[in-house]
Image (cartoon, rainbow, N blue to C red; front, side):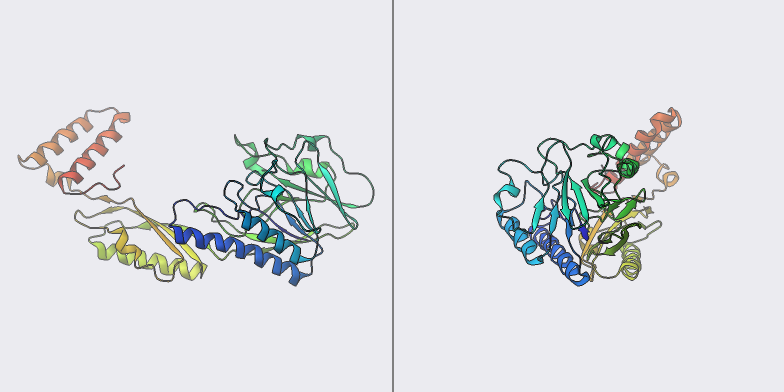
Length: 370
């Protein structure tokens, strides 16, 4: 089988420009196309989809029909569970598509259902209009019929399953105790094998800056009487990378530009094409060092995306500024005296007030002061 999940077709990509968001949505379609090509190349017997194929509130009728067309072309069984972002609901996108005969969509209710493919039994349940739960796993046991039994579930396992608000939490131990050989899962966007039995392929393309893990589709071979063979195939064209950019001691924008050029070169060498870099500029820079983020972004040749955030602070010489009888000196003397007399919990807001005041007096527009 080829297993994929969390494609999130028609995701709006809020925060990107209209052309960039459209490009990203086209990339998600391309990812599904490439997965189906890989399925044909590997000669798999079936394709499984672990939920969140699209985003229910944004998906267009055209996208739904496009998916149905692509699945029909695959010419092999395509078995689908709906996730929390594409739940089954009356009158929803899934119900408005004429699905080809080779597509099987698991229903959404309180019970897990079986779908047979030769000697394989796939068991699954879709998300519906109420949150899905997996409590039935604690008492469920697969039939002792000599068949291979595999579970499809869109939910959360591992450490994340114990966090508040986890979607459909379950454990690998419960999957194993129920008699399943493998769980083909969806919901977590980073590819991994959890507890030796729960397989997350991850989203085929990263969808946000915090998705820096592995993104793949999985080719699974079930061996009668043996352990399943799993090949996670790295699949993403885009790569999200976050770097802290040390600008400590920068005397001018030239030093900052040089630090950014080095960071871009290092990340490009490590990750290659499709690099999306978020650089967090940090450290104390000399007063008067001008950091123009728009100008720096124009130097991002070869990157798919460059996002910059300026967290630098000016390195004021407080002793020198406190000398004399100017308004600036009086301000520094007054705040320093209050800091020296303050309790530990009061120091941080006073130190911030000192820095913001100094920056304002030096003509800093405080674009990122908050």
